[in-house]
Amino acid sequence: MPIHEKALIRPENLREHEQLVVDGVDVSGHWSTFIQSRVVPDYNEAMEDEIAALPGGELIHRCWQCGSCTNACTVNAINPDFNPRFWIYLVRLGMEAELLRDKDIIWQCVSCNKCTTICPREVNPEGVMKALSHWLELKGHTPKSPSMIFDEVFADQVIETGKIEEGRTIQRFFKRTGQALTQDWLIEMVRGLLRHLPVGLMMRMGLGALIAPRTRGWSKSRAAIAEYVDEQRAIQHRALGLSDLIETARRDAAGTPHA
Ligand code: SF4
Ligand code: SF4
Image (cartoon, rainbow, N blue to C red; front, side, top):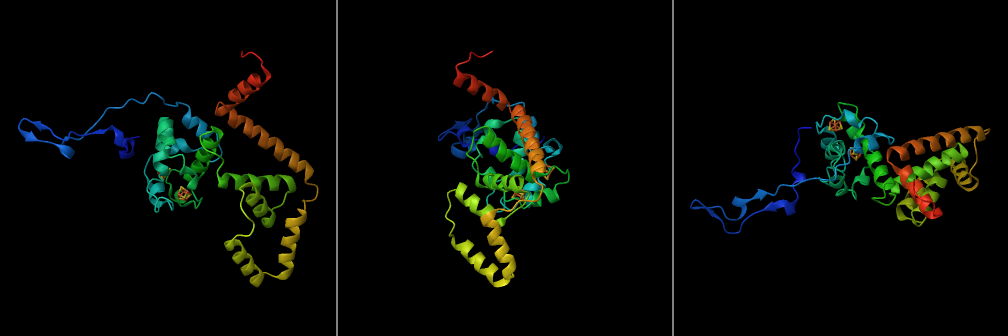
């Protein structure tokens, strides 16, 4: 990984002398700038493996740091601090503390997939952004983001009923994120739908939101999917060392001595 990031130079590590003369040459202020050497003692050597264990992060090891993802990124065009290539670089080096400095913006990925389309190494950077958000939440660094809550509501509904009812999904998402159902943009959208969609379809959607119909004979599929989800969750927790934490908390709660 040959790219050295300017962002790795923290402002507090820059030093300059207000007044400095060396061999008769005035090098005061900016001319005397130097970077204080810095030691990073907190590498997380398992970090790449942890991200790779989460859905979307599997191919992070393929990145060769070309920067095409960041160059194409929709969010980077608005906020230059949103930098997928840089975060992949930090993960691969295990620089967890550096990554955590950006923990409050990583979730802002809008899943437009421009990065994924352009990536020459098929890294799936959009998936890596999802895996990173997920990792931040699982490790307790950030609260669950609205996009993650939406994914959960969506997946829960598919597993529960074998169907997607848009009205019900939105309703549940708003409830879990504490949002009012009557939002201006939503009212406007419903008005537009009422003008353009067939009445029969609108009635079916409304009914679907109320009664949540299920796919016929869905119970076996539901059980199989739920089992698979549990298995995957256990694998991910193990990869992130969370099963140990959970076990420790369980033992603490039960007053059982640690092994
Ligand atoms: S999917 Fe996310 S990271 Fe990729 S280009 Fe879109 S906003 Fe940027
Ligand atoms: S476009 Fe792909 S290979 Fe290039 S920096 Fe982004 S993830 Fe890495």
